[in-house]
Length: 240
Image 1: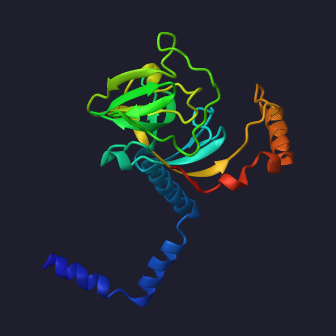
Image 2: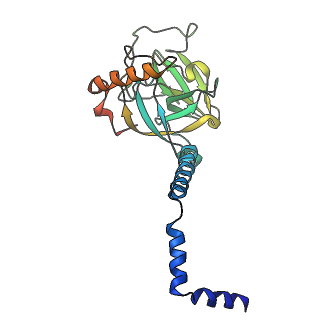
C-alpha cells in the first residue's frame, strides 16, 4: 500500500507544486549541463579511440605511392577482432621491435603460406604476386641475399597466426624482410580513408622553447602556404 500511496501523492500535486518543481529544474546551473555533455563526449571519444576508430599520421615514405608522408588516416580498430588480414590488405600495427612505434605496411602473405623474393619479384606459394598499382622501386640495383634481404629473400613459410608484411616503397621500407614475421598480437587495425593530407615542408618553422613565438610563426607560415601544402586530391581517398 505504501507504493500506491506514493503514486497518489505525486499524481495529486497541485498546479503550484508543479510550477515550483519546474522552476527548480529551470534554475539548475547551466555549467552542470555543459559539464555532463563534456564528460559524455570524452567517454565516447575514449571508447571510440580505444576500440573502434583512431587517427594516425604517415611520417615516412615507406608506403609510397599508396600513402604519402603527411597523410592522416582513419583506422578501423574493430575489424581484426573478428577476422585476419588478407594478402593485399594494408594494416597498421605496433612495430614488434619497439611496440611504442606504429607502422603501416601491406600484408602479402598469411600463416601457412611460403614467401620468396627473387630479384625484387615476390612469390607466394610459388606464384608471382602482381605488385599493387602504386608500388614503387627507387633503386634498379639487385642486392645479393648475403648482403641484404631487400631483393632476395627466402623461401620461408609464414608461421600460423603470423603475417608477412612489406612496404609499397619496396626499396626503402623496414618490414618483414628485415625484422621478421608480424605476430597477430601487434595488429592495430586497417586504414579506411585519408581524411587530411599535408605536404611536408623542410622550411616549416620548428617548435622550440619557449614555443609562443614559434607557434605564431608556424601558424602564419602554414596559413600563407596552405594551398601549396594541402593535397586536396587525396581528401577522402579510400585506402586499398
